[in-house]
Image (cartoon, rainbow, N blue to C red; front, top):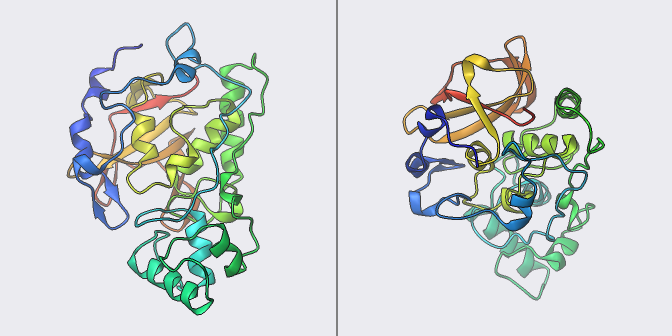
Length: 290
């Protein structure tokens, strides 16, 4: 395994204590990290190339099934459609207390078997939402043969991401452009398209309350870190909380001091900034295709 660079080590697991969640900070014990005292699954280790970095693939590990909206904090495009169907307007795409209460009221009003606010396939069907209950399990298929080079993979990754420009920002979104994405959901699907499968990171985990895909990508043991001063087209740019240092945003570097990101209202291209409100650019970037 490659040794972490001093720059990478500057953002330690301890900074995860204040990783941003939709309504405030999480405690250290509440945040899900793939790398705290754990080892990667054999399938992921087998995918590491001889240079110590994650090797390209022609298949992505399938999603494990349909996400039941079964508790506070679950987020994503399924929650977004649920809230729209219930007439809740514009709000964070999270199963918060108001959303759960609205589901319970719907279940009672429609004499459904369950009235606990959990959205399973039966409740979803009763809601009359046109999308299949499992529509959010979509994953981009790798577009390249195993022998494709780094430059071709970078171009494929960026071309795919360009297709999301104008898509709505949806917290926990990690699927097709028409449903919206968040920053790390977009990056994860772009990596899939270019042939990287950074297991155990997955779209299944992406929607879970305490999971932070951006954080786990930044700390992934088999992705190369380089100083930001050496940033190249196709690198992943990360931002951290200005007060805690926790990674809470990721973007794709396009070259020419421009980056593509999902932030605020939509997916767009913008100039690389050293600072956002309460965010600071990380001292190193991740190079997925070295």
